[in-house]
Image (cartoon, rainbow, N blue to C red):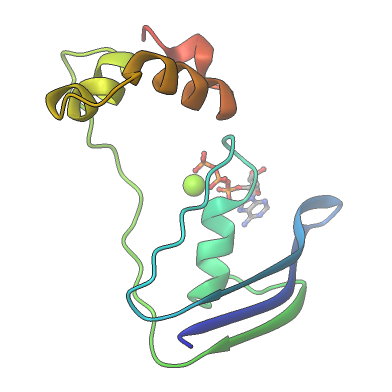
Length: 115
Ligand SMILES: Nc1ncnc2c1ncn2[C@@H]1O[C@H](COP(=O)(O)OP(=O)(O)OP(=O)(O)O)[C@@H](O)[C@H]1O
Ligand SMILES: [Mg+2]
């Protein structure tokens, strides 16, 4: 087991980002965390890397963890939507438009579709 997270919680003052968060990760396993902007995804990753302290919970880490910082890699001449569906269309995947619309809606970014 590389990471074992038990009942993690993080607050900034009265702002509660997450609680009762449990997961395990083995080496070479991939865990995808999604959610609207501001829910605490980056904060969770910062807590895993000990760049930020947890409010409560137990974190067992077997080894060292590296962090790749968040930055933008979008094609500037394309809209958000065009960027989103580009790779999927290239691979001729089915229902690309519907999946992109659902993803944007799930992340509360539908209004940014044509930016
Ligand atoms: N050091 C801090 N002190 C106080 N509040 C903070 C601090 N760092 C983050 N926050 C707040 O915690 C919340 C979660 O921020 P975080 O950056 O983890 O969100 P996110 O899910 O990664 O968002 P995005 O999708 O935009 O990257 C936000 O409301 C943010 O303002
Ligand atoms: Mg973030």
